[in-house]
Image (tube, rainbow, N blue to C red; front, side, top):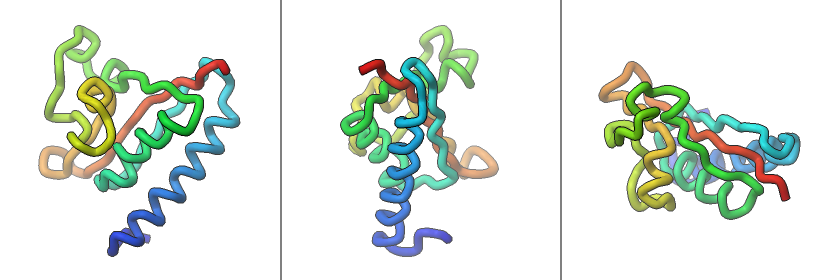
Length: 118
């Protein structure tokens, strides 16, 4: 079901938060969680990452280090960074991956978390 209205998009984002909450409960401390969507709405991506950081025992890892060779050397990759002004600071924006359909065959989003030991 595609989000045709803002209400649909918010409903999808809320539904995804249930998945994040459940996954974080099942994950052992130190375990890693990949959050990936095939949508480009900030409500379902950057804003859900912000929500997870604020509400769940999760820390954001740099997903670029697992995917991009240059990122392992600390090179910025602005083309794949998360959107600005959508809840993430500059460092966090550059830890997520946002693939635009204008540059790739499809659009999708990836964030990588580690479960904190609390």
